[in-house]
Length: 272
Image (cartoon, rainbow, N blue to C red; front, side, top):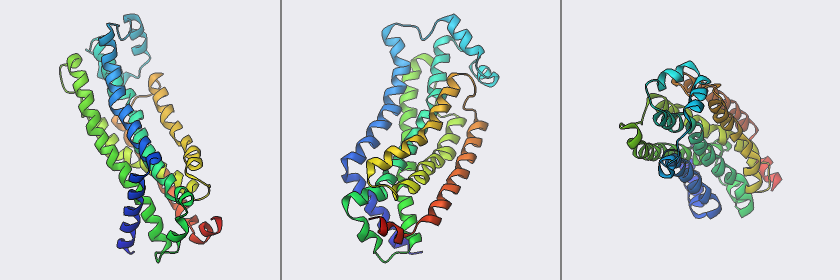
């Protein structure tokens, strides 16, 4: 394995991403909305408008539908504190996972489909690198930024959540054990899910937008997790997050194994 060649591919792709407004813009806007705007709104909006987070009867019915484990964690809190913990610790957790998924998907979609649009793929495929080196370089150029943004985003989210929740909670809310597992174990796996999906798609479509639109369906499982928590079907406990990460790593391995098996530069050249 020629690691200098792999690093050169990663460096080239990251430079292209940094110079592309169409790629870079969603990588800035979406994390800003999820990590800053949403946590501030769910905590500060009821206080700023003078509206209650929910009526007492509504809160009792909502809590009765929650799993027993979550009810135990919220026992002893008042209505405002329950809403704050539910929103910041549990309901927004699946939305946080959209960030590494989106970053890896956007960069991977640009990896080959974008190169086709820029007419640079053919020159890349004729470079003196093996298929394995080229494939690994493309993987790392999408996965490493996704993991980096996820880690930085967790720090930013923790700061915003603690600052906005302090007047209600009177204590620090982050980090807790579940979120640490989510960031260290699940977020890299989610980045791999977006990457593995795009590896299979981006080399077979004509452009970046087409690849990104086709890969957008991979966000649906995260939406279902949000709905499941809101409906009281499940909640993000440490055990569930560990299991979720294990499942995602298994899916990642299958997707990347298939992507590596079907990756042939000769076929890519034929599609140009």
